[in-house]
Length: 115
Image (cartoon, rainbow, N blue to C red; front, side, top):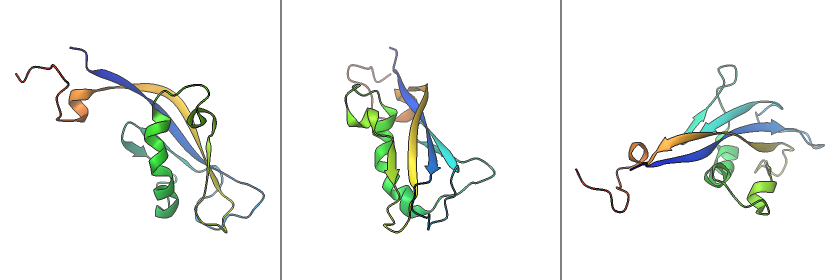
């Protein structure tokens, strides 16, 4: 039984607005989301926990195919949760990666044998 599924890889990039940025995330810094992994470039391997906490709930929905009219498809920028910081985080869908159900969970698919 083919248990594969696809998820979009994501790029999460800091973009500036007309308000000054307060937090430690300079414009242009980024990281990738591939499956359940956050991948940081070696030149900037960190992000503050508060914006990360605000961004995390969006990743699973942005990774999955959505209807063209769904706001999750069209809206790409999330504001920094600090009301005094002008940063936004742009989430861009990249190519799709293929994963195996059996390699991502111990829960068997319905109808799969327990061999």
